[in-house]
Image (cartoon, rainbow, N blue to C red; front, side, top):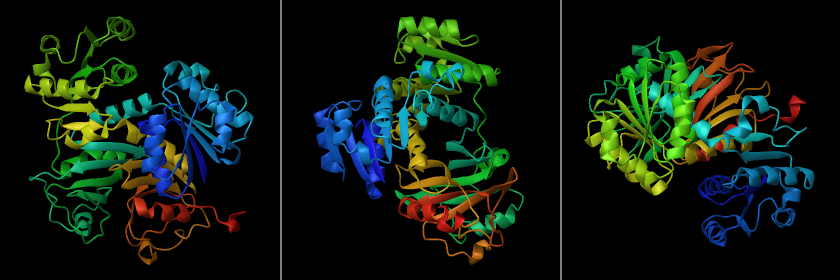
Length: 458
């Protein structure tokens, strides 16, 4: 596949890195010569210095032969125009744009981005995607990651196995026998810096991070089985009143009115705007690293502090100060990969990587076959994939024990007739089933083949 990426920042770099590793033909455009030099020196991609919305620059990057353009510059208008030019002049089949301003995405303008109007096939709002992830993490304390699949009926939960975890040293197959009515499957394990796609005979160990696919209604029970029975936060402090902070506060007001939320915003005009827009949230004007402001927000009584400013240092240091002043737990937004590596040792209880969320959304539109949803874990070392099985798929009709699945793939659940099915050796996949599976990065190409439309289908 030939892909043109506009924007060589963190998101653009991450997308280029993943696509180039999979032998795609990737061209990257950016106005920064330094960013282009860095990306071409470290990745197997072509780089072009220039404006991503200019026709001559797109032409040099090979837009006339591109299968897809992915516009992820820092400016919405550049992303929009780049897609329009790619459509009008080069007839690029698939156009993806990152849109940050919520004004473009208001419900009353839902038909704005369409072939008849502004020809963008996929719009991605990092703020909304990250906001939804924050809300899921708030709803399921004890999970280090939570993602939904199959019309929100299936969840993938990442759970840390602590010293008192009751399921360690037990073969995974035995767990299914001990809890036959629990709709959950361990599909991946991150241990000592290595990713493992387990077999039924494997065991969990203390310190493991387990990736479990489960029925949405069994999420809390699954967490409890792993020894995580933390109570849902009732008193929350949000640091940062930007798009993400506002989205989280507003959604909590609408869906969880019993929660008590206080929001700290450093910009006075933005703080006044938030106070006007939010009904039950207490808005405080000041710095998230100001101890006086934190005490004014009753940080010592907070169940959870969520740091969502645009500054990683403020998020990390502010959450550390909040924890020292008595906050029970912290959830921190961290953009810089280097900071994510030491966040845990700095006292951060949990962190969110916004780049990973955006890249996952882009990848599901790049993947071949009937791929419906994707979520990348551990910096792309594996993906949780939801795919639809077609009549021509080699998976259909055979018992799972008869299938010779490629190494590095483990099926976690089937979704059929709006019901969750926990797979075992006797399970047979039917056409139109949605399959949620865990795949190591090197096995993703096999997943695409398993769910790809074959010539016999037509």
